Structure formats: structure tokens, C-alpha cells
Length: 443
Ligand code: 5CA
Image 1: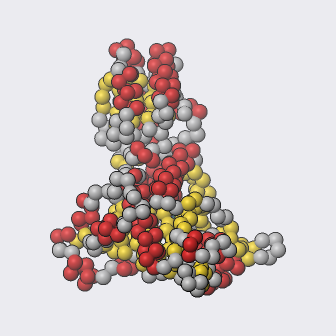
Image 2: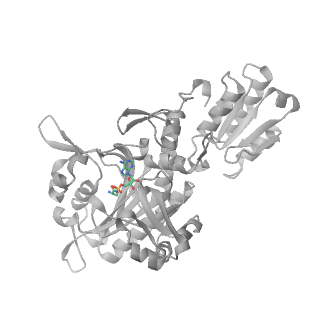
Image 3: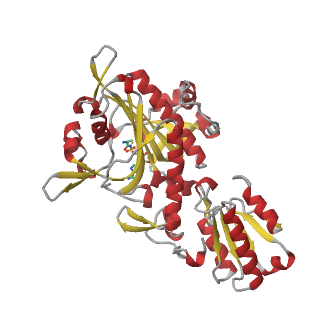
């Protein structure tokens, strides 16, 4: 992509309406624009990041054995009347009437919809377990939408739903998601800590939130400091194996959100110097709720003895659009965003310091083509501007590598490469620079 043709409306000034750094940087880096309170348009740069995050989530879901489908955003109210949640959900639900005066709603989540699909299809324990997910927009008419995409009204969520015949099976499904979440967040460069949590309007009696620690987080959390040193799960997982040991390890230390926190237990289980009281951003939330929807909605399966019993269910959410903001909260400096490579909108920002200069253009265009041919995503800054402004934009949008082509280097047969994360610079031949960028994530 060439910057001269790219829709990237960066802002030099700090937007007054943004209270936290991720919101400020997303506006300044031209990633999103607000449409109305808590509702955003995703501009090309932001959209690329959103899609990268979505893809990592998808790959880890697929690896765990979950299957992707797509349910609608608009649901019939009837299903929610059946489950008993239509009234309970209150003002957060956006209620809509179609032309025939039928009550509809913009889905805040999909337990009812998936239970309806399930009950019309699966009738026997032999067809279990099943785990189905989709990545779809949700609407919740939040009282206080704020912090940009972190607490939106319209937001993108990955939600899945597991179906099992008995509690032991449901527990296995829960564990699979627990482990898949650890891997998903680790792949994005995040340290997410699973914490005991309240299940709120989704219901049920076992629930964990996955939080990343950040001062701007909306949740107050209490946990054992040693969690910070836990190594992320990066190895392949055999999802058919018993995952209980992994889950046991990640739940072995105290970690709870405010609404589940028990001060006496905290003090008994965590030595004073290990007590961490902090703020966190909830990036995922998993629930086991057994027959909460299956019973009222009649999602029954026949067991080995032919008896019909309600299917055991759980649901599992990841805030895909919230993650864009959460990653920026965790990965930025005074000059802008510092994208972890797996979610970066482009891997390389190729800066031509003197567009219009024949030699600079030739080298920059050649590198641009070669990077493209090697499958490396590159944004070429071919805009005629001051060097300072070009570097400021590159730092702001946070691409992991900057490759700088200037008149002096051209004469010497060199280019400069800068790593955004630590500012480390190296002067290299163009060939060595290409070889370095073609190597894996650490370069
Ligand atoms: N049905 C369940 C799991 S599929 C559910 O809806 N869970 S949830 O309410 O906890 O939401 C799942 C995730 O969506 C949260 O962990 C959070 O990361 C994200 N999320 C929730 N509300 C918002 C919001 N208003 N703006 C952005 N992301 C949100």
C-alpha cells in the first residue's frame, strides 16, 4: 500500500473527547471515527487490525475443535420471551419493531438463538459434544459508553456455545475454551489473567473473566503477583487430552474481580508482599450455566437409556473490537502505538525521505516490490513531506519496523532499519535489510 493513495486521516492534535490513551491514539492514527455515542466506523488502518485480531481468534477456536457459523444481528423477541430474559435484560437491549409490528431486537448476545438452532437439530447424546461460534456485531445500549471501542454500544464479539450431555463433558468443553483463551491472548502479545467472576445477565455458576492489567481498566482486580511471571502458553495443545492440569495451574493462585473478591480469603491465601490490587481490562469471559436456557427452551437430548434431558451448555465471549483498544493500552509509548507484530496493520513502514529524487524512488520502489513479493505487508510512505513529520506519523501508527531510504544512504548503498519497540537502528545494505525482514517475528 502506498501512503499517497491510502485513506489515513492522522491528527496532529490530541482530540479533546478522548479520555484514555488508546482512544486518543486510535483517533489520531486514523483508525476509527465516531458515528454516535459508542458506535464507530472502522477506517482502513483500524479495520486491518480488527481483522488480524479476528483471524487469531478464529484460528485458535478452530484448533480447539469449535466450528464457525454466522447468526444474524437481529433476533425475534419470541426466543427471549421463551428463555425469560426479554424483560430481565432491561434498557440495555435495543428493541425494534418490524413493519408487521413484530417485536425484534438487535442481539446483545446469542444464547437463545443458538439454543433454538440446537433444539431443532440435535436430539441424541450421540451427536454431542458440539461447540459452535461466530464473530458478529452486538448491540448493548450501555448507560455510559466510553473509552472509544473499549465500552462501545455496537461492538464485535466472538461468542461460542458448547453443548454436552453431562457435567463432566461440559467441564471438558469449559476447559478447552479456558486453554484456547490463554493461547489466543498470548498470540496477541498480551498477558491475560483468568479470574473468578460474576456471571451477571448470562447466568450460571462457574465463570472466569480474562483480564489484562492496565491502569485505565474498568474492573478492579485482586490477584497473586506471581501471575505476572507465568509463562504464556505458546506450545501446541492436544485438545483431546485432559486439560484439567493446565486449568488447575492457572487457577491455583488467588485472582478475582471486584464483585467476586473475598478479602478474608485473599489475605489467607496470598502473602502480604504478593497481594496485587490493580485495574484490568476484561478481554474475555467464559460461563458454564448447565440447563439455564435448555430447560425453558426445551433443548433436550436422549441419553443412552432413551430418557430426554436438558443439554448442558456454556458460553464463551471475546471482545474482538475491545481488544484493539486493550492492545494499545498495553503497547504504546509517548510517540504512539507499538503494535505487537501478529496484530500490526502492516509489518513494515517503508519511508522514502525524498520522493521525486530518481535514486531514492528507484530504491524505495524496488524494496516495496520485493517486500510485497515476499508476502510482507508494507506501507510505503511516498508522500512529499518533512522528514520529522514522516517519522512522527510512522511512530504514531506503530508499525513494528521502519525501513528508511534517504539520499545519503542511496549514495553509500545502504538503508536504515528501525525497530519501533525499542528504537534500535541499524544501517544495512538493502539486501540484508530484506533478509532481516523476511525472517520470523523477532526479525
Ligand atoms: N454470551 C456471553 C459469552 S459469549 C457474553 O455475552 N459475555 S460478556 O457479556 O461477558 O461479553 C463477552 C466479551 O465482550 C467481554 O468479555 C468483553 O470483552 C466484550 N464486551 C462486552 N461488552 C462490551 C462493550 N460494551 N464494548 C466492547 N466490548 C464489550
